[in-house]
Image 1 (cartoon, rainbow, N blue to C red):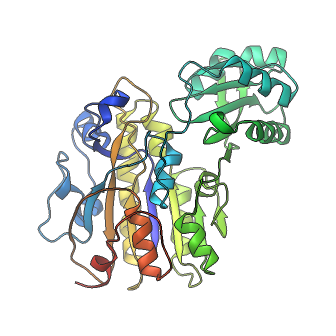
Image 2: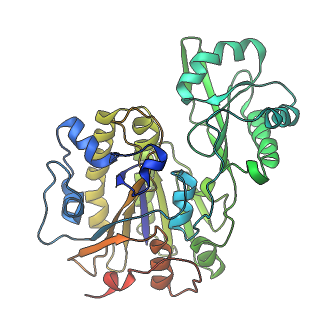
Image 3: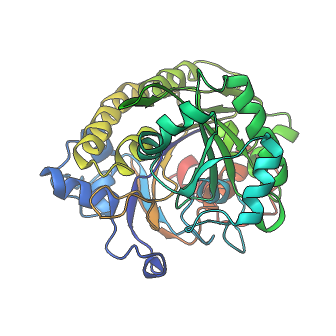
Length: 387
């Protein structure tokens, strides 16, 4: 089974989106409207245009996939909570966020842990804050600490001022103190380089994640001796748990190339790939044209991937939240997740409707691999193995 997760590609505001200020968000539709339509012929064939009214997408009468969308039960709109729920963990309370920055007592603990003062301590765009504080960081050597709408604590430092090994060690120490009520989902090392006025983030980011609070379908598969491969930031999101092999990648193109290499291997049960560019490069930067181009590029890669799948393979295309590039906000948006499920065994699909939780994916994986599963979710596996 291949799970390809299009990070940030939401398909419409959830019923409680108003609680998050996300009324009217619809990442896919609003992006299409902003650019005059999307050209996604392979996703069209799977049935993308059947469940959602997306400008210029055809509505095939015989879609190749089982299509629908999924409602998130966990509170929040975070990468971590979205992925965890797909893997079968529904949170009862949201992961902590800091719209006013971290409390002073937390800052003091951070500074004690890393042995020096910090700059920033506020929600900010990662590119904007290094432009704002990068020169002061060069002068003082003080790391830049900031957050976002996600449950994250990010530490930015220039690679020539704070070597990568030292930055990673700082993040490990901060991860150890961010517990209890301040147990953020991720502590993220954000190295950058360049000169004042031309700073840029380097590809050496590293996430130090909170482990899931209970067993995931990845844990179950690995305990049953089945190989689970994570591509992109999947290993980071699950703090390595349940992942038997990991391939970090720098962009969507590298992620797809790595994914393609997994197809002929016969020793893998589940491959989960995160395609992060939609969210990081375009959603958070309010760039609908870049977002559209990334979707169309991904669709072109999809054609060859579909044709390479074996008769017993299964592909699930989904997402974790929205990141609507057309709204004033640069944050994630509380949206339904995309769901397209394809198997060469069932060359004609149909409608899966609105699934009550992202955890339906975990239940489906469990049934297909015939492993125990006591977690949430309702399997749609029968649609993929018989008709």
